[in-house]
Image 1 (cartoon, rainbow, N blue to C red):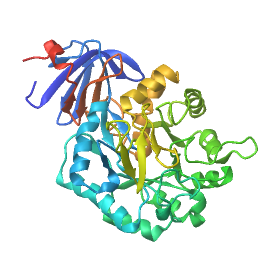
Image 2 (image 1 turned 30 degrees about the vertical axis):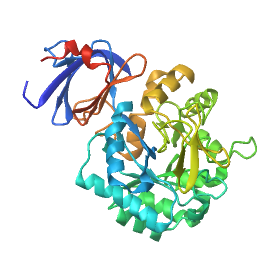
Image 3 (image 1 turned 120 degrees about the vertical axis):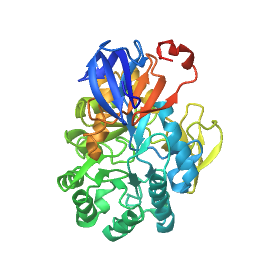
Image 4 (image 1 turned 180 degrees about the horizontal axis):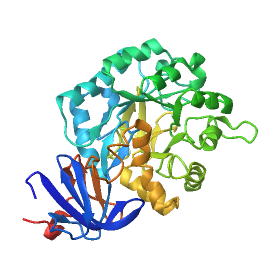
Length: 398
């Protein structure tokens, strides 16, 4: 074994939709090879703990008192450094709607931090959630910042972001001629329909012109009616349309989540946290989102203080996976796809992320049977080890 190579093994390594006893060799940030169990003496033997692909969260606004719109480089670095605690190895920090100076500063900050360096989960790009939304379906987004879609304005944001905007949520009914939808589709930016009152027919046309996904399905969209299916109807009916879903049991009932997965199959649901700065902050405190006060209930729900509207979540990805499997009764393989290979496919990252295979980034999470994270690797480096587990590393070589 070379000094730059690490050999790990477990009797439960996720490969090809099942657990198998295997070894993984990690070298130069990638998986260099996959081998039979116990072929060689491993550097780390995880015994019966599960070795899974690292999670990818493409819709998480912040945590630990930080929000992407703060445009605070140290806040972003701290957040990226702590996301591996929940098994996240890569993510898209999203913005919320803001006036042009604030939004420009937010996307520029993400680009600056990415270029100057950080530790932890990999920043894959930026999710621009707004300002091109529907006023009625804006949710917790600030109304003063919501505007119709504008290609020229988006180009200015993309220039400030130095090309890092990879994903955008917009309301297609406010995108005249679907100009921005088409522009993004032609320039490598994945379009998701959300915070939208679009009719079924408008959503269908948007999908035909390049929209690839629906944002936090069931929330912030025109509801389903048997005579007017709305955006929700399109999200369920269009089998090849990706769809985000917040898996905290508050934004969608377990039965609704089950129906969503039943409609979409295993390859198009995407689990997101939609977490806010209040994640991992004490309940009862008052915090801010897009200029509005939010507070956290004892059950972890983040709500607008003045109206009680759900504003986002405090969900951790590993607990979202547990919710899917244990409460929504989603098969494990489909639940895991939703936080690994499916978001990677949406972003075009599926040739290097989302599964455990030779040549792929060594983004790996070691998960206990209770879904708690034991260790997380980001591009081959162990960046998080749970405090209660180091004493058990008798199977790690000295």
